Length: 113
Length: 112
Image 1: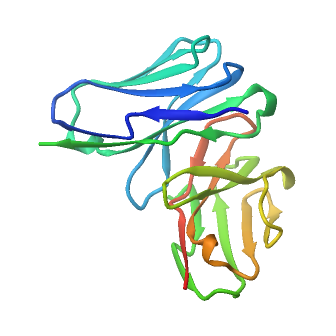
Image 2: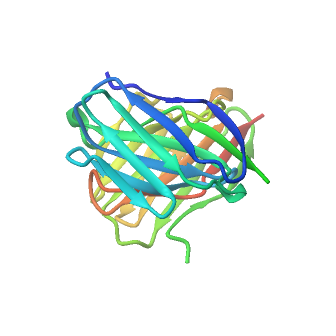
Image 3: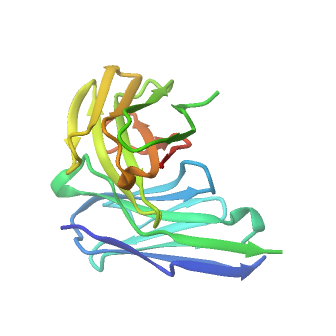
């Protein structure tokens, strides 16, 4: 059974810092992995999607890497800003059920000025 | 232009009542989903429809019944509401199965 966990659960940093958010999954047989952002009272916004054959994806100040063999993904946020404050979720589509997106526990990020 | 819209945004009701949440997407997607986010913010799939056909039905009490009248709509009806049903319910859609999912803003259901 696929389980997805994220460390740390919460993070508070000053503006300008480079950040690394971690996601680990127990079964390396995944179809793809997605990183989402959730703002308070809002739905999820897809940030990056990495296919199982890819090693990383980049969008602006965000870079997500995938190491399938070790069951890990990291989301790197460069030069953090207060507007980056949100909860970040990773989710995987497992190969055994490619219809079912399994979410991690989330990392609540606060960037203060 | 809201891509995935859910109504209502807030729903406060008493135990034992029956309620419905509506979801509509204007993205032309084939696949739609319902998720439940509990008080610990853990998000879990409940149902998924592809081209109006049910493809995922997780271990959800049969008090919950999804209905997809067409590809653009997926409604969720809940009978005999219980305290444990209090949560935020999210609707999502994707172009097809395994594709990036787009989420609505959620419906916060509170049972008194």
